[in-house]
Image 1 (cartoon, rainbow, N blue to C red):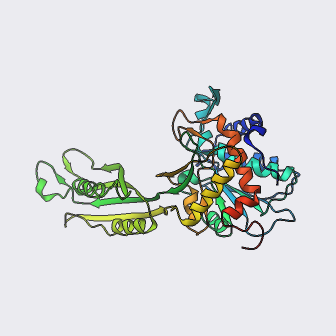
Image 2 (spheres, rainbow, N blue to C red):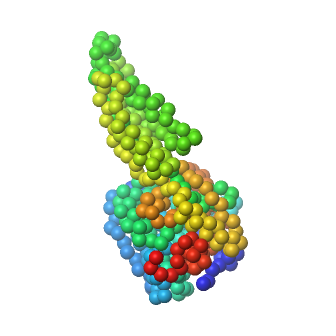
Image 3 (cartoon, helix red, strand yellow):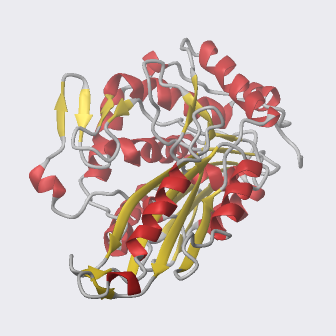
Length: 392
């Protein structure tokens, strides 16, 4: 099978393609612009034997599934999943244009994660254009709502993952060794609302019941459960309440972020959060929310998949590091179906969601070579515990 070492891949066309994707601003709240980018992607596959399926755009964005299954490949597919939506509002490009400086490509959304999604898509396009027959069918799913929770794409992600041999996630890679990601914490979101009793702060203070005081006590108790050792963390990021300084506040609210390392830990913490009651018996406490993404754990299957990718990388003349992340991705959703997942396969760089967002251009060819190898190499699949061809 035709594998390519990084030094045989010209990065210039890759840079041009990533620029073209980044030049289309795609905030999660603009499904029309997400569709414009997916139109561009579809057009690039014109005339190739790649099945293209569009899922209708909603207020949460549309999705595009690309499938290449030429005669000669068989079994459940190798599936890559990436998102094309970003956290950046329309107009960001005018203020912060795409720029190539000192071996870096800067631009809103380029690191998280248009570069990685582009590489997976372009790798599939080139394999199809060359008429190569991979051991298994290949799929690339592009979604448009990852940055706001993947509510619209979740069911599709889970269905495709459950039917795949393995799932590759080209989310950004971090660190000097552009490490792959083999585990991610799970993420929960909760809203605490306290309902107290208003009163005049001077005239009848003691008749009131402060909702803010209740929320303050809840915050101290919740954040007191954060543990470096266990990895369970809580962050109260937004607090609102009250009307005026001279009024005992009848209403207050807190938004809570929870991160957990294992599924068991996440489920226990979720149950405890939802069962919370008020400290003040005269205040009513409401808790809503739950686990948005379960933890992506480093199972034996994930470890074997990473080891296979590391062996493949070394055969291509490069190293592949390994890391764990506190942030979540759609890899969490895929892993929850039980399929082996390898994440963090996008370009190296830094500045996700930040003004200095960029990719390191030196990582383009190595990452393209690795993605191509994972899609084409029978040895990689065998090492990962997946028969190269067949129904299993």
